[in-house]
Image (tube, helix red, strand yellow):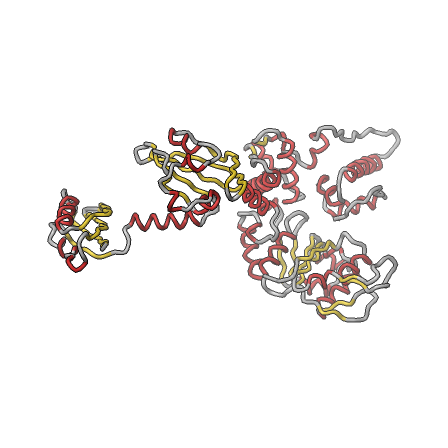
Length: 532
């Protein structure tokens, strides 16, 4: 019959000898003994097994009571090292990596459930076996017994469970004196690594933890957005282009736990008629070119989700009136239809425009302004949060590396200094473009300052691109020559861009400013060009 005890003594020489002799005299066998010295006390943890019949067994605790220096004794369920081993066993069996450890004779001392499942082994039977009998891809764990280390080595193993590709790390295990007493191999499934990288670089749902920043203003903003995320109130997110307005909107939708989808629409990217048909839908035959059976609008598609009206300040006045009615009556009417369709979607708006000035100028309805401005969120420009630039740059490098399956690069102190001194008219979006460009163009693992190419340096620094050269024209006024040069630069930027917004970022202009200049010079886009 086993018995486990915790004994406390005044620390002295000979405690273990006295205990061993007394236990042996009572016909008990010592299974395990641990001694822990704390200050002037010795804590002895004892696991003993009775070798006599139970009815003949003496009371061991009573038999030890008169040992000199004994202060207390009590029965326990487990010894400290036994409890520690059980905890470690639970931890190892609940991690995704496989773990195998061996002693100096290559015998398996530890193997977790993941490794057993892959190798088709029973844990109890695997312990004590020579690791070379498992048929591993190589003997790296054996070589680690000689002090060799390897990290993230790509390996392939064909086992009973199938073909297993993994990254393995092997390390020697050393005692307190630095002597090698074993080795351990930890392996991670390659497919799992790919899925993890994809989930980080392309998250299906964006939440507040995905918003990168340590500036106090951003932290306060996140706390405020989390507070109002679960409400049904309309939110208006204000901020310059590229500050992350849609990111905040998506995070609020995720935090709201709404069952419907997040449905974004750029109000500045669509002409008035198309905007209304997208938002409200239309019935069959409402207009030429429409679907025969009609089409549901985005408010209907959103269901119990969120409709995100981006660039709401660029919405035409006629559409503003209809949106206001939706917000007030919580129903829509398809174009050409007569039936009122109730909507349940939450509405989040965003704009980089000065709505107050637009209301004064009559370009934005005052009643709509008050309707959407119940819970405003103002996102500060990147220029006002320079402490986040390094953090964002590191985040973008990691995201790009994960997407491309490469190690993440870093930036030299000189390169970071250049990033910090730029005024960032395109905000976080411009910073991402600069970082992505630098990581792609730089062949080294550390990105130097010369690869940090800002928008106004594109013509001078991108290989194969010749910047426009201004040639004076006699007899032509300076204003006219400057206008001609501006037109040439604008045309060049539009040709190199996928959208008007990207051209604006390249030139360091706002979205509205570049649209005004396109109209000013009467430019016509010769190929489809997205406004958003």
